[in-house]
Length: 373
Image (cartoon, rainbow, N blue to C red; front, side, top):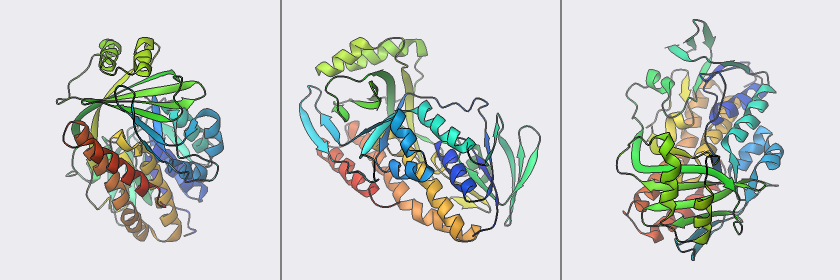
């Protein structure tokens, strides 16, 4: 509303960085604290729903993304033997962009952190928030380095295992393992792959998506009834073995080419949707801290970054109390849909549904995500 507010963002991931950019450029005094002193982003590639390009344009990084990421159209689905099954359309939602894309996670993180640094945001690394005196008119926050600060608003953007959520909402639901894990690796872009391509088997889903000129990342979703630890030194050979169930030549060529430089990453899949309210006093949660989804719709990063856009818009239009209520009301249904539909896709892939339902839910969800933020 034109007043300069003191705002703390806890967490320097995609959602937190997006909020910092927009709120600092709106004239607020923004502090961002990130527990990782190196401000690193771990992971291989990330698939991007086309709606994220609307957010990139708003953040001012769309053109920079084009230089280091990949833009494609459509999602191609094939059988394990490489027979085409379906092609889901992904129409462009942003001028100058395509319907989906991909990028390496560390590359996207650097685009965003450079953009944060270009604003007046005060970034403090290797620091966490350890205490909140949350009042109706503000929050006193204590930090792990012994300092403290006074804020008009605190935004918890500290991910699936959010300490902010634990402090403000001690009875919030815990992350839930969904019976699947995902394997990822980086590789040369296979010949004949022009867009996001997935092979669907009875217990595995395998996919390839471009992330930049000449490179791609693969993702393999594996049914695992129990959340067991997988030793890092065994992961490469396990992933190669998983791919043996797909006779498609493209898949076999990729399996043969996997090596120590493929950056293989294994991650159990968990989800969490916190019931409303998403704010208490002057503390609000965004991103994975409040609606962590599995990657089945390639929309987790997008909906978290959309949170930042909506919250910034509402804070610019009205007082903090009204803005937090409006933010929650605008975001609930969209985020609920992504979390629950992604969870249902996981169930179907584990044998509790049909391929036809899988395709229908994917198509319906892509259509819903094309709606305005």
